[in-house]
Length: 157
Image (cartoon, rainbow, N blue to C red; front, side):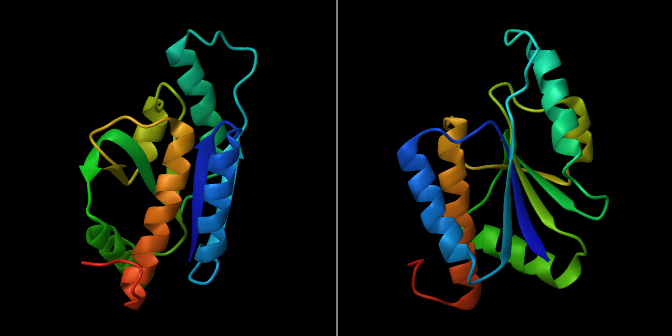
């Protein structure tokens, strides 16, 4: 099993890149990680949210295999504690085939096709975060989850 994160757009904020790199390096000790950045959609009116979501959705679907379990980071998703996230990952490792794929959408969210393909929706917070910041937050939470699974002292309860 591997974890794949698919995110829309490039990371162009230096401190986000640095933070993401810290946690991706730490995660190498626990799981096979792949981070896929879907390029920003070109030749679409940036104000046409539905067309933009559709094009982003098509690019995302190209990165997903039929056996993958897909989790959307979505404001309407279920909020989990770090311990609950660790349990979800641990159960996935025991009982599922394929990869665990996390998707970070663009500014307007996801197309209907992506919502239909998703196995779960999870919210990181009731607050709204810049989609670049979400990358670091997700990477840190994945790292935290693995330290919880392994009983390591990073997470203090």
